[in-house]
Image (tube, rainbow, N blue to C red; front, side, top):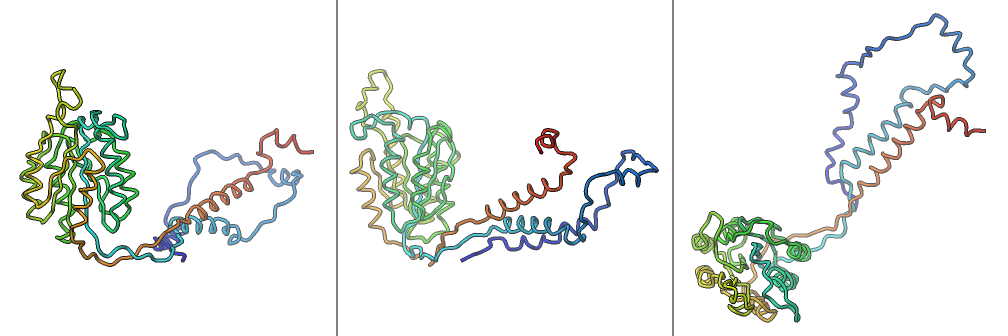
Length: 336
């Protein structure tokens, strides 16, 4: 079905004539050469006389171009058949830590050493794809928290944006409290029994404006259930402690457990596909909430066609308006 997203654009149709009537005529400050024998010069001109068309016919090409531009601006699109969206499901927000420590390569995936963020992207990318019927959102946080993807049924896009996340783009610190507060802000209007936050981090809160425990109490008041996941190898697993530094010690598991317990969720130490499957099974036990019935249509944009036609017509009109005498000399010499 053909549809115009912005049909009100056609209200601008009389705009060129309104401007012509309101604006004063242009005045040229250049001196004009006046000769008394202009008629004689015209008689000497060997060119054929041009056919003078009525004024209304001269304006037809410009009117057609203006109509094509308005049609392109109205955003024509072809709408497909309406497809029903799931009417039950959960509202799941995924908050992923992208602080500097997430770049530490102490995890293993299929026999290879990978960074903590890479293991999150690989394991939770599949987790996102399996959330059929759920709305998925994505929050990335470091020194500050940012909503990267609002709640949507488009799981593929959320997975793509998760896999494109880069360590450090939100700062090098870890603002767990700000991430929880941002999730509460975007989930508080959703059905109470379906609000879920999955918080993934590898460290302790050392940034942001909100204390994690305060944010957890706020989440509990809004019936937001938080599942916390600690990422990182077990202490001494990487041998880094031999040099006096072990990033696994930064993981504040007691705080993450307290956040989960306060909101009715659970804490997991995520580092393998088996552990991620346990998280998915736990979320599946939550009762889906009834959502408002909705439909979606595939929309194919058609504006390039009238826009391209207007551009081509403008080019042809400009070429036909050029006086043959003013064309480049080599073009005139090329003629037989």
